[in-house]
Image (cartoon, rainbow, N blue to C red; front, top):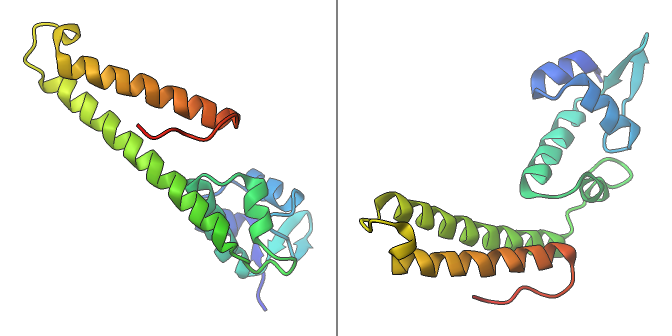
Amino acid sequence: MKLIDIGDVSARTGIPASTLRYYDEIGLISSAARHGLRRQFTPDVLVQLALVAMGKTAGFALEDIARIFGRSGAPVLPREEMRKKADELDQTIRELAALRDTLRHVADCPAPSHLECPTFQRLLRLAGRRAARVHVRRRGKIKPVKA
């Protein structure tokens, strides 16, 4: 099997060599050998790094992503965690859509002052409640309340 030099892995993935070294040190990926001081990887590392990127984009912490890889480096995808993360993303999408709608209303509102606009006042109240729920949810105190 042909090994890939760390510089080539970096060039193919766009991930800096320093990040690849860090991922190797924390066990997220594994170098197969060294050529002098340069780490060498099997071609499978490209798939692993794509999964890492996907996991990071989905909001998983590196520790969570590391658990997804089995001891052999092959992904072990915990379906319940994936469902939970998908539900969290759905909530984030709803919140971002509401924020988008608020911004569009602010941009298009004909009221002389946004503070005089009943729609804007309602959107502000909803945004305040939403922000409070997100803050509480991130602190892990209580479950989110439906708006």
